[in-house]
Length: 410
Image (cartoon, rainbow, N blue to C red; front, top):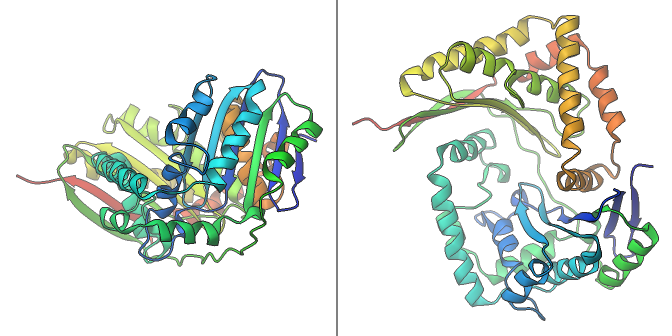
């Protein structure tokens, strides 16, 4: 077996993957993110993630921050639409110290008022900084259109108005309602005896009370296509073209991942990069992305270009999408696309922190984890006919949403 799992009595799961190295990567993932926030509480999950590092019943902020840094370890965290993740990279001998800290900040943070005030200010600065980066902000605005009137359309950071209104009562209620111990995974990739890891997990996490509140997530609807423009104080035009896509359990997920990689994925040889940047020289950045979620997904193409070249960039993007809708890939084209994608996935395995986080999320979502070979087999099984079907469904022109950030006129 490529990995091992042990479930504690309270529902928290230990996930372990062996790696013959003195460096350990570990994470603690909670299946609670921005989409689980109550109405008008945008940014709450992210606010909590920040505050977890501030004060617990037995540690000050400095003690939390120094606990791992003093032994050369790296501690960090992030929030997504569906998860909160705390992770660390460390020398092998410091795992117990790390898990002890994880347990303390996740389950015993006190959220004092003075820290709420300070961190609220930090996050408001983060929001302002984010809004100054159109290539980032446009993706959030695009998701707001794609998931209109749904929690998935909310900005993970929240808004200035919502963050200013968040308080300790909101924080405690969110944790009680969403920090389900059966939806938590402590994951480790390193060189350990699994039985000793179980004892460590039992020691640090086994005493915690069970919280088995069910999820109450609602699937978003399907928006119509549309064309939207927003004027911004920027010098370039930034654009996103995309649509809803397959969820993480859909049988065509692997096929769309392959199509996305062919169209505008990693590397300089993607179709969009070759056509729009290399051939026509009209966009410094051109890329596509497919993000599967538990009950939906999103596909998008992002580009940035001079304002006078934006219309041509849009035409060329639609030209490439139409090629995929109209023309079945040849045997050699499909083989090369698969070979490239499989190679990139294999190389990505070298990033062990990303790997163990991905495995932990898979355990939460599916209660299982595919081996690398199973993933390769699914990619290899994708046919040219399936690529054509996927392209016609996802890239249907009537479903596509286009959002442009345009420079303000004089």
